[in-house]
Image (tube, rainbow, N blue to C red):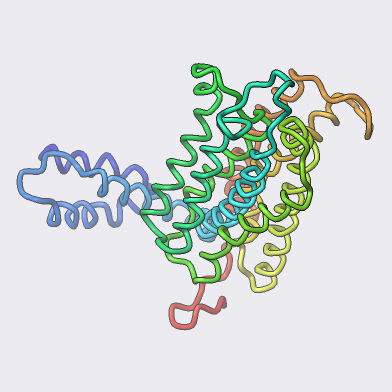
Length: 326
């Protein structure tokens, strides 16, 4: 057995055991036939393809074939929400504090967050005009920029948006990476349209200063955005569920982490036992709440898959000709 064949057979562990026994030799033989001469190990594209195929087979065996399409639907909703927030914060960044306030700024903007918001707007624009690899690359850049802002701010000594603003943006960005490559034009236009709406909302609300924008926004505007996102996802789940399509349900589960982080201030207040109008929740409670949401949210998907396998039957498979579910 060559090293290349051993590599392919190791990757077959992504598939269920029964599937490996029945079709393992056929799969490995196909990849060996397609491999270029002199190749000693599977290419990254082949490895990704094998792991993706194995995941699909495991989900099909668990009765959850709609999980991946559902997560891709969540990716579209996540990009739409991230673009909406980017448009909102972009205009808020222009509200500089008074010159005599002694507050550091980032050039003509209140913080280095302007770099991240512009990156997300570029991703939203590419989603409309260049879906697929260019959009995913732009999303990866925007996600990376958002994630490194706290460290970059500390090193460069420039102000940054609060973590309450950055954390949900990162969570939305992770989901956004899973957006489908092929979407109808109306769906591709949603993120950039949401960015325009977000900028309009920011303009109408108006903010007197940096602190008014980010403090008030993180405590009031973000929870409202999270609530709207959850309601939209639930309505989609109900509508698709009436057609025996489970994608909406999986999308809701996938979105619970960013929705929870958007509502971190309210959740932390509930943990501290604060009533409306009471003092703000403590910083340790906010951090603990964010960590709990970040750990519990992603764990719900495998738990739901296990429950589907144990309790439920697979949803109706779509007709290969018309797409209707039988």
